[in-house]
Length: 350
Image (cartoon, rainbow, N blue to C red; front, side, top):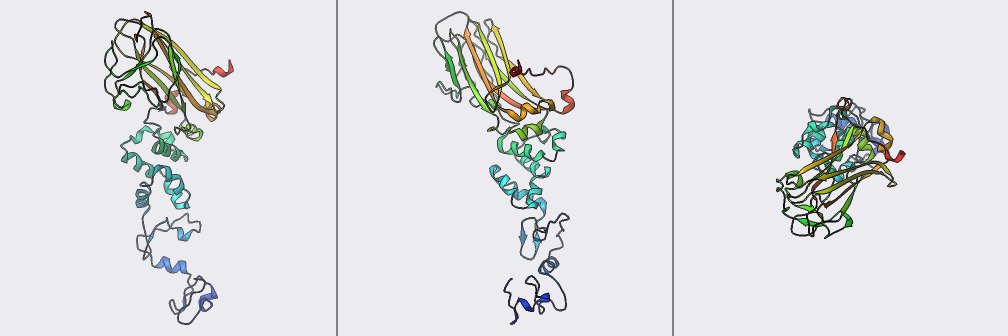
C-alpha cells in the first residue's frame, strides 16, 4: 500500500499520513489502521492469539477471503498430511506452526492414523516440553515399532542372502541359507519378522558374521535417547540345533561410540545337545539418567553370532540362526528402580 491511490488522493491523504492507514473516504472520521480494519472484518469464529508476537495479527498461517481463520484443530489435520521428512521444515515457517507441531494433540493424529498405541510412550516423556522430538522420531523412523536389524533372517527365496551382514569366518562347508530349516521344528509365521521362516545354518567349523547398526541413522539421535531415558536396547536371537547334531553358539554384542570405541560388551556361549526346539537368547542394554555421558557418545551397536556343530560332519549340521533382533524398550522411572535389573558393565574402563 506504499502508493495507495483512491479518489485522486495518495497515501499522504490517509489518516496521519501513514502508508498503513485506510483512506478517509473509506473509513471517515476514524483513526484506524489497516490491521484494525481487517480485524473488524473477521468472522465470529476468530480467536485472538494471546501470544501474538507481532506476526500478521497472530494468524496461524491460513486466512480465507473475508478474514475467516481456520481453527488450529483443522490446521493440525492439514499439517498431519505433510511428509514426515518435511515436518521440521514446517516447524520453521512461523511461530504458530511451531506451536502446533510441538503439541501432543498433533502427534496423536499421526499415532491414530498409523494405528500405533499412544500409550507406548510413558507419561513422564509426554509431559516433557521436548517430547515432540520423540513423537517425530516414531513418525519418521518408527523407533518403537521396528527391528533395528536389517535382514534378520535372510530373504528366504533360495538364495544365500547375507545382505547387511559381514561374514567373518566361513569354516567347514560355509554359511548357508535354508528357506525351510531342516532337521528342526519349523518357525511359526510372525508379522513382526515379515512372516519369514528361513534361517542361516553353520557347518562343522566355526561360521561367524556380524552386522553394525547405526543408531543415529535409525532415528536414535542423542537428543531422542536423552529424552527417552530410562530405556533399554533389547537384543535377541533365535537359534536351534538339529535332532541328530548338537553344537556351540557364541553371541557377542557391543555398543560403540562415535569413534568406534567399545562402550559396553556382552558375550555368552551356549552349548546345545541335539534338539529340534527353537530357543531365544535375550540381552538388554539398560540406560538410566546416570548413563547420560555414555548416551551422548553412543553411536552404534554391533551384533555378532557364531556357530558350528559338535559332530564334525560334512555339510550343514551346525547351529541355525533366525530372527536377529534389536528393539527399543521404554520404561517409566519407577519401573527401573527394583531388583532384577543388571547394570551394564562398562568394558572400556577395564
